[in-house]
Length: 604
Image 1 (spheres, rainbow, N blue to C red):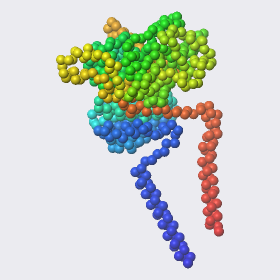
Image 2: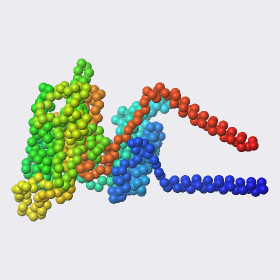
Image 3: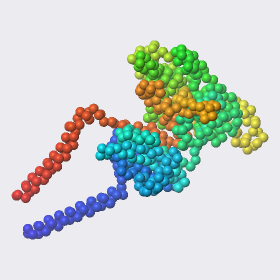
């Protein structure tokens, strides 16, 4: 009887063992085909954005295979190794969605003969148009050594298009980074923007044709040198041109998006007619208009100056589309101060005219930093049939407007309580917010619907083909978009000048300091106010042109939770002991428990 019991128990134990082994093997086989992750972070930093999933899942966009070669490989410091793994993790997620339309590999650029490495380096650098290398000084065994790192990737699309990706900024020749600490912030920033960097690079690589965006000229608009920075931002995705209407009905042919930034001279009726018909044909019109002009040199010299109405003629046409620009200025407690040197220091004086516009939940502005709008005017939205009008940027609730064409004083803030300025009777009432940027979308009705337009098309009567092409449209033939911002300064970069090689004139370029990100005068004194002007402009153009692929990613916020260094310093010993003692005690306790159970079992 005891023998049978022992045999049965043995069979049961072996059966249980093999079933367990088979189950584990089966689970491992299943798990090799499945990849499931749970993102438990509050800001969803490890979850792909919906726009990314939609973009990568669209098979029509990927007509050829995309090969990505990442050159961040080899014997890397721990921080760069972690960054390299984050890139791989993100690419694995991309491949889960795109399938075999995306292939990637990691390559160590420092492997091979000297000739092979030199040839690869020249290919990657691509005459300063490719990946910029990073020289890094590392301390090992008390000695300093220099490491050459290529923190980038090359995207090959269908064997014909090559796109370079720069994950981390390179170093200047002869000026290596002195330690890994010097690039930690760059690594952190790139980690937070990794999805955007990859998606925007893939987007550039697979783009077959660039939509054409034109900057209108001929009326004193912001010129090339003043818009060099914003042009550079959108140049990878759009073909950019300058256009002057000059009464030509064909001036806006093949223009997908039209930007009118800061005109100072009046438009003729025929020019307005041509722009109107461009909108009727489904064109995308972006207007950045200054309702008032002022002389800032006079303001700085005397402390006050008059403003004058800026008569362009665009106002009435925009009114018919649902947008009205008022001839006033918005003042807001939420504003950028002015820097005033005083007694060896610098004072920050409130300047309510330099409004920090608050983003709404509209896709153009969502999660963007406040936009700096200096001397901006109020916009009113009108109800127009078949047209939807929405605000994009607003002032805060503690804001107000001036009268028409007011006098401006730099000391206006002195009239208010310094600690608690109340710019209106109820500063907390959200109805006090003023609209500073708005968009109208839908089917518009022509501004010239009740006017004689034969005079504008009479020049093409003799050519029936041309006449049909430019036939007057009273209503939109397809939905269009019109955007209005009561300010043009927000997109203008400061300019540096230098003599040309011949010494006969000047050359101009955008200043090294990016005034679309922060105020230069305040930054000199380490007073940092960050602006979202740059991202806002990019979002604006993408949304108007119908490309929202990276719009969500660009404005996505990932919170950087830094360690409190002071607490770490104070409690370092305590946490070290916890990390050493608890694992050891846990193992010792487990061993004692197992010993006790074994004794109890076998001493009966």
